[in-house]
Length: 269
Image (tube, rainbow, N blue to C red; front, side, top):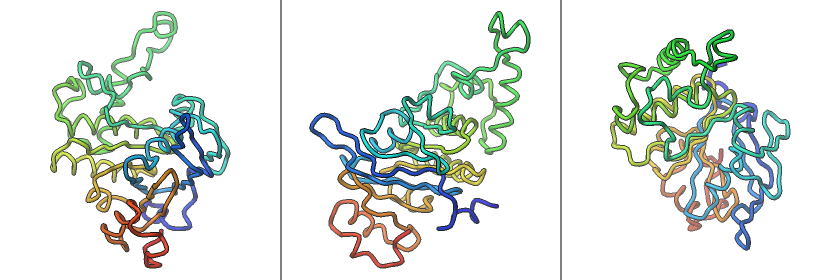
């Protein structure tokens, strides 16, 4: 089944959140929000400042623990106590600050924190890294995603901003088994480099990995998203279809200028 065939209203739910509540003292960041990610889709999450986007993504990625509500992965309840728990379940997150090590090579960055050890006593006792195997796998994985970088042995600091972002996204795609979460991946990038990252996100989706995309860039959202989750005042305001709703109507719902009931029927996704 292709990503396009899976990306239908009947596609299985990969990840769900039901009635998620998150409070920080007197402030309620999430007020019973719901969330649904389907197989084979790019789901954009948008919202004004203070809408709860970041809190929702932190709950989905294990960075925060919700006070109330339920998270489900492939229909099974899960509870993440840390981002490591989410990683073990195959959920990879790329944050806006990239978290790449500039002085290290591309291959070393792909396996950062998950380095491969040499087989036998050299790895088990002396903890020697298997750099040859990591380099070979890095070449293979970057080739699968068609990331055009000359050499896996060059330092990340020699790359452009768009290429660095591609390394971070490729690392997430290489290890994710369920979901890739991308937080503002095209922020601070030029037009050409932003398009390079968008194309890579499509290829990640086409590999069969659903993608959650958090972005303020509405043209990018409408260009790449299969569905758009609109977050407002700590709740899910609507889920809309970018092919049948205008950008102005989407922004109107996001800011509260329009209610969901004022949208045409075909705008809902």
